[in-house]
Length: 295
Length: 230
Image: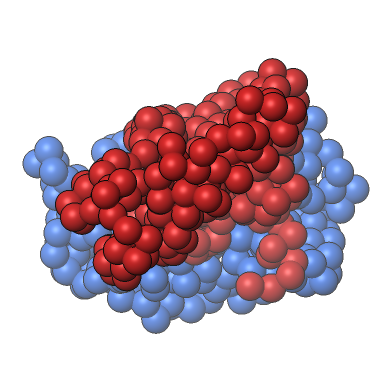
């Protein structure tokens, strides 16, 4: 395509956009709303995922060894635990180490300093790869002879998994619905422009303009509507995210939730907003001008 | 060059608009196409511009087989034609210059070509001082001259004018027809559809008369068939 044509298409697309200010405003508005909703749910899912990963790396299952086992017998269980699926590392903690750990958590409590290690059990700290499989890993540990008890925080893990799954389902559903709505509105905006320009289109066809020449300005119009919507949505999303971050950090005094910094997310957010905006815009314009494909 | 051979045109509603017409128009000719309302003149123009496809027969326009033309070839064929309508069909929100530049851009002309060609064509129709006016600021005759300039601007080999004087008074009509004759003298084939008997008689050109979808007369001179009415 020659440069002057590009300039012409761009100019025509832009003037189309301004010739129906209100419809363009509505089309951009709906695109912004759609992207914002889509972005918000995606970011919730991203954060739930990040917290799950943290939990996976931090979470350890404690497997307590039967009291009747000798130290040698207890240590012999390590290879069996390590061989279980989903287990990444196993550390043996003797009852003496466990006592020392416990005491170090309460250095000021004199009554704990004289504890007899015999009241603690030998145990294994087990790290797992996939938190989703925590339930089956716990079951496997119980099935090993010599493991008397297992303690794991399944509830917290399952909570994050539920949040992530719900956010993903809601996100996918909303994306589909809003995508169709956006395409429809942009398509109607451009149909209005084609209607307004039907005389020009008829003249262009009569003097021998090709179908693609007639189509391009409308494709540009859709492209610009979508892209402008994406840019506005991006900045709104940024502001919204920062506000939510501050709110969470202010209220989460226990630091239970880690919010992913926007600085590490903005690139994929910008790319997916731009991609979705352009897709919706160009898709809308192509659906509006389909009938001009046949001259 | 225009060739029609045994062309029939029946619309979907059963109206037989064109009945077995054969017609040759050579390059550089000036032809009046006359006939009463409903005689098939408009359908014939639509067949020549590729707006409708004949039910049977063969049509060649400037080397293109219009009767079986592909969607890709159609724009190329239309670039060989300049079409003038009774209602001018100018874009009211564009200036005279932009109305012309618009159709040049539509066929891929460069800015340089546009800047060079438009003053020449406006000069030809004697409107060089109206380039920046909008169509609504011009008289009917001037608007039709802009339409002629627009038809000429892409340098077509054939001009087809569909009732070009229908909205003009007799003086302006004569002026406009003289302009079309002048364009013809410069080498362009001109086909004019008209009702105006006096005007046709005045120029003594080839006159093809249609009635009920058939050619009833094709001769050089004046308007034939005393009963023809608008």
